[in-house]
Length: 219
Image 1 (cartoon, helix red, strand yellow):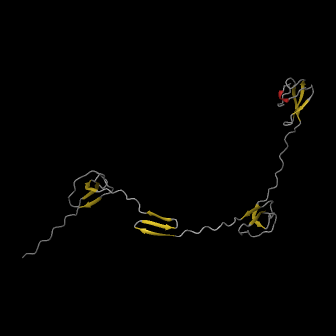
Image 2 (cartoon, rainbow, N blue to C red; image 1 turned 120 degrees about the vertical axis):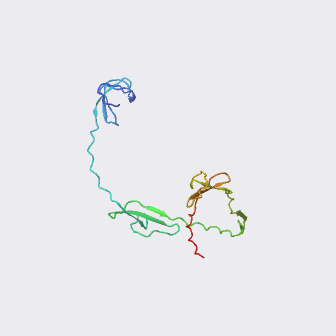
Image 3 (tube, rainbow, N blue to C red; image 1 turned 30 degrees about the vertical axis):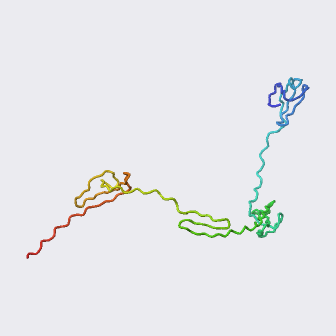
C-alpha cells in the first residue's frame, strides 16, 4: 500500500485473502500505517491511511574530526613492521612499504613491491662482413649474402632553356624591345622549351656616355 489517502482505497496487489474491519497494515518501506474500512480480499477490501510510525528526519550530526594527512611512504622490514629499511634491490627481492601520516602515526595496510627476476642471456650475435661495389652494399653472414643498391632513382630531367626574353619588369611576361639609351635599365626573363616562364629575372643597366676628351696640343 502507498499514499496518504484517508478514504477507503482498494490495494489489489497486497495479496491479503481475508481482511477484517479495523485490521492494520504496515508498509515496512515507508513506515505508513493503514486501517481496513471495508472487509474482503485483496480485490474488495478498502484501506485508509492513519499515520506513520517513522518520525521526522533528525538534525545533521556534527562534522567528524579531520583525518591526518599522508606524511610519507616508507620502506619497512615486513608488512606489519614499523622498522624502516632501505629498499631491496636484489634480483627477485621484495620491499614492503607503509604510510606514515603527518602526526607520525602508521596507517593500516602495506604495499609489497617485488623486483623482477633477471632474464636469460641473449644469444650471441651472428658475425658478418660487408663490401661495396659502386653504390651497392653487400652483407655476408652465416645465413648468406644480401645486397642492396643504395643509390636512389634518377630524378626527372630539368627543363632546357628556350630563350632569354626582354620584358617590362623582372616579374612581367610582357615582352618588349631593349632600351638602348644611356643609363636605361632592361629586364630579362628566361622561358624554357615548353614556353614556361622560369622564376626570377635579371636587370641590365646601360652605361652612361663618357665626357669628351680634351683638345690635343698644337704641333
